[in-house]
Image (cartoon, rainbow, N blue to C red; front, top):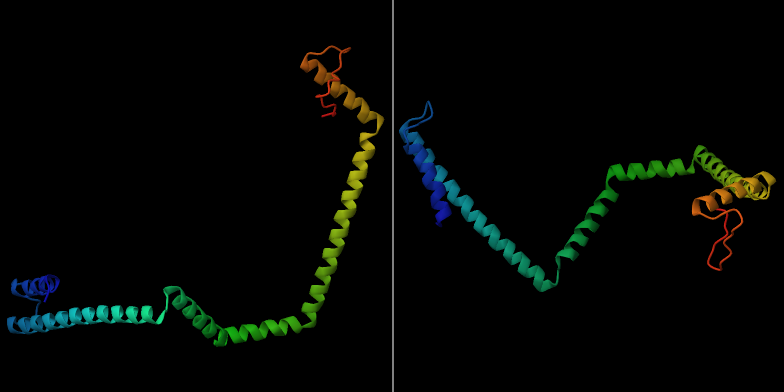
Length: 177
């Protein structure tokens, strides 16, 4: 036994010999139970050691066979996915979806949505062309030209130029905004 085994069995023995017996148990019964508990704890420890040894052996065999943790995960995933596909719930859902896909209501809905998408696309395209044309006409209108001139004058005043001066340097940008 290693020190952890002795620690657990000693503490269990201390409880039984501490004089605090549960009601209805004689000291002899408590001692028998304590002996049995110690044996069971020892067996558990032995089984843990055997399990660790078996796990090490399995890891060594996998390493020698070239089975990496990644390939093991892939294999587990593939196996799990196969089990899902073979399950009654998956088969029932798959069958139901296939039936829905073949139904007339689904086909009509799909056609209607497709037509609505085409119509919406055409409407937005038309609306974009109309807006672009309207902005072009508005920009060439006399009222917009007057507005543009007023903004240009305001800009000149803010920049500190007088009405007679204009900035025609090659680096200036004469855009209205």
